[in-house]
Length: 136
Image (cartoon, rainbow, N blue to C red; front, side, top):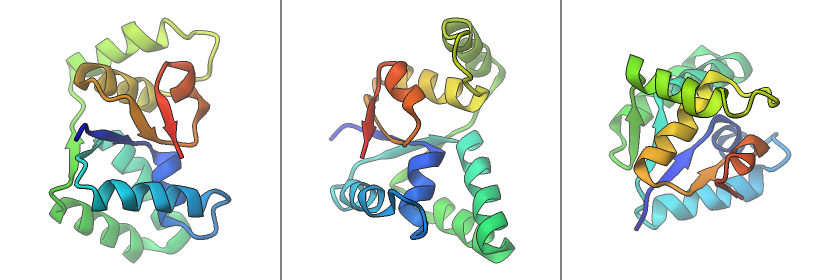
């Protein structure tokens, strides 16, 4: 089974019952885990998730998220190096200068492109604009 990408918006919705699209995101995330899909993300997304969980649920919840993530073999974290970041800037940020993309988005797109990943658990329409399939 092909890997799938975890973006902050979809992942946070899956883990946060108060989010508007929680139910749909939770179902998709659970199916991917139960189906044995490798879930790919970046350390930039992990940093965004950590701050959101810490801010809205407390520091302990942020630490629990990190501890759980680091022990879960189904979640693969790509660590951003200089070459990956430069490729993201050159291939994505320069291409979409009319969109308010973040460097985290651009790096996510480049990781997906490099690895042939088509689906992202995301609520961010930028993924769709970049040619990827949003789930849910």
